[in-house]
Length: 84
Image (tube, rainbow, N blue to C red; front, side):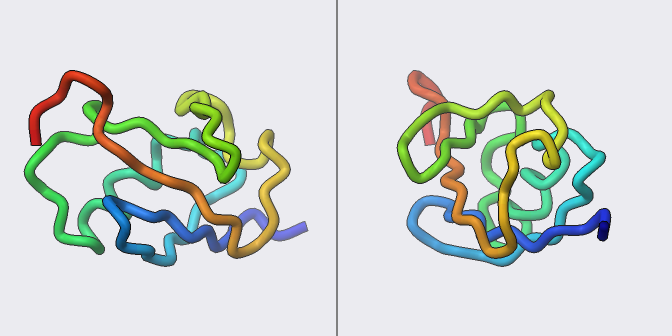
C-alpha cells in the first residue's frame, strides 16, 4: 500500500491538489494548500478542514485514518471568528 495520497483541498473556493502522507496528521497538508493557493495571510492554525458533508475533521488524526480515496475533496476555511 502506498503511503502517499493525492487530495484536492478547496481553499476559499480555489481547488488545489496536495500530496499527503497517510501516516502524517491531517494538519500536515494545510500549509502546502495555503501556499499553493496564495493564502498566506493567516497561519495554518487559524483554519479548519471539512469533508464534503460539512463535518469538521480532526486535524491531529492521521490522513490514512479517514479512508480518503485519491482526489477526495476537502474544504479549508478560516475558523469562525477569525478575520480575513
